Length: 81
Image (cartoon, rainbow, N blue to C red; front, side, top):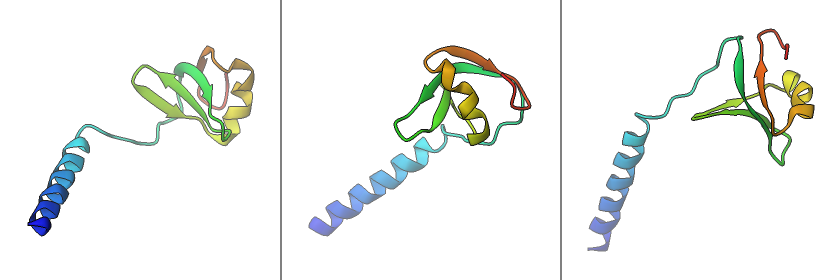
């Protein structure tokens, strides 16, 4: 009985993870204009939070955004603010 319970739980988890993957997508964005609130995490990473989108900022651009932490900004293409 314990083995069938374990198998049922594992099947449920596999189906749950598979169904959630239908709604999640990731990709590399092209250079362009993006806007959002600048957020730095405790490990030094930088993201732009824009509604439902969480855009990770490259190492080359994040130091330019440090003065704007917590503020809404628009980042243009070609490493320009």
